[in-house]
Image (cartoon, rainbow, N blue to C red; front, side, top):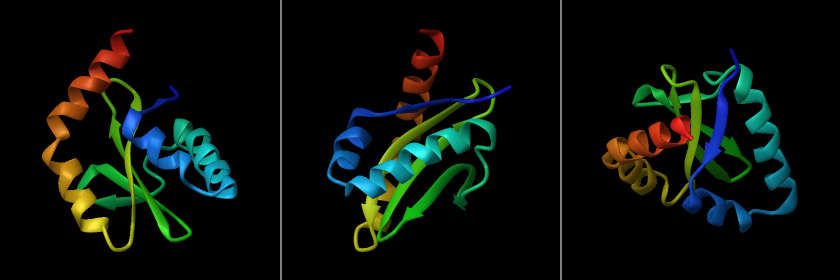
Length: 104
């Protein structure tokens, strides 16, 4: 069964500032992850992943039980750890948001 791919508003705003070719690569990544959500680099936990796109990084969470991949943020190399810490701190909030998406 394929996974559904969703984004947060924060992620959408951040990706709008990417160059057009980087935005295309993010959209291509959405399609790839529908079939294989674990193909990118793991961070801390199996469900917490990142993909490097040039000097940028995009972060996403994989929820197997509800078959959702949720893109939650982006960063550059300089603010990478700050972004990872923020996402980690808000795992529960992201989980609730994903569950709400699964029900709708």
